[in-house]
Image (cartoon, rainbow over all chains, first blue to last red):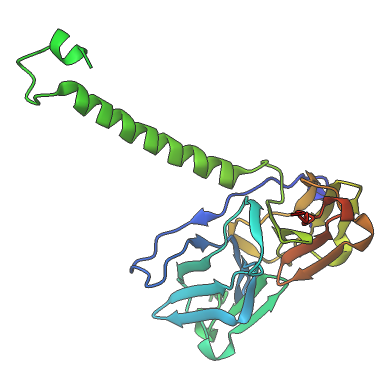
Amino acid sequence: MTDVNVNKELKIKEKQEVATPAEQTRPGAIFAPHVDIFENDNHLTVLADLPGVTTDKLNIDLRDNVLTLVGDVSPYEGPDEKDLSIEYEVGRYYRQFTLSEVIDQSRIEAQLKDGVLRLTLPKVEKAKPRSITVSAE
Amino acid sequence: MFYPRLFSMPTFSSPRPFEELSRMRRQMDRIMDSLMERQTSIMGAGVFPAINLTEDENHFYLRAELPGVMTQDLDIQATARNLTISGERKLEVEGESAKYHRREREGGRFSRAFALPKEIDAERIEARMRNGILTIKVPKAESAKPRRIAIES
C-alpha cells in the first residue's frame, strides 16, 4: 500500500457472520465480506474480499438503489480429507448497500481477480458536481 | 440422595428443588461447552492468516484465505515438520481524488509458523493460489504414513 503502511503487521480479522432478511433454504454460515467503498467525481467504487468465489458463483444486483452482493463458495476440500484444525469457516458471502448516488446502470463494470471484486459504478451525468460561477453585474 | 430430606423446604413450589437445580446446572454446562468450542475453532492461533488443516492418507492440506495477495509477495518455507508462510498484502493505491466511505480491507505484512502433526516430505510440497485461496499440499514422510500390519495366523 502506501509508504505509511509498509511495516504494518496484519492482524487476524474474524469473519463476520450475518443474518439475512429472509431465512435461507440451504443451511450454512453466511458472512459479510470486508469492503472498501470510495468515490471520486465520476465513479463509486466497491472493493470486496471474496476469497473462493468464482465469477459464475457471484451475483451482483442493483435495483431501487440497493446493491446486493451474493457470492457462493463451493467447499474446496476433497472428499477423503479429514479436518485436523479448523480456524475459519467457509460459507456464502452476502452484503447489501443502499446507494445514495444515482448510478448509470448500463456502464457498471465488475472485475473479480484473486478473490477481490472491484465494482465500478459510474454516476449519471446530472449527479456530477458542477461548480456554479456567480457573475456579478 | 439424602439432601432432599435434610433440607426439605415446604415453601418450594417444586416438590424436588434440587432436581431443578441440577437440571439448570446441566444446561449451563452445555452452554459453556458450546461457547468454548466455538472460541477455539474460530480464534485459532490469533495470527494472520487463519489456516485450516486437513489430511488424507498421504497428504496434509493447509488452506488460507488470502484475497488479493500476489504469488510473488508470498514466501513459503518448510523444514522436517514446520511450515512458515510469510508475505505481504498490498492494497492498490487509489487516486488522490478518492474519498473513502468505508475502509475495512487491510494491507500489511504477515508471517506464520505452523507445526504439522507428523513428519513431512519437504521436497515435494506443492502450493497453489486460486481465487484468493492458498492451498498447500504437503506429502507426509514415508515414515509417517500408516502401515498395515499383517497378522499371522
